[in-house]
Length: 122
Image (tube, rainbow, N blue to C red; front, top):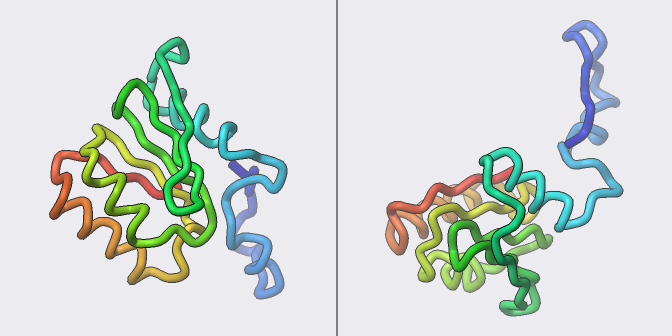
């Protein structure tokens, strides 16, 4: 994640574009995935497999303990496919969705198809 340490009086309107993404520019999807493992205290020794769903790279950890997709512009079909697998945890990138209603829709899809899944948007 980006190191952003400013006090309120140091912010100005010109900084908004810089603060749109909280992820460092040089980070890959694997960097984000392993960061999630560490944040949730998941062992790094369990199996992980990448796959492609509708052109989006999806990462599955330990047969569904965690499923993550960090692509830009994730389609509703990709979200529904992940939700149907009912993972324990699902993680997406904030910039994967064009607006707040799209992010809210992800939560609603999971409530309907996988109500026990913990969904996180980073």
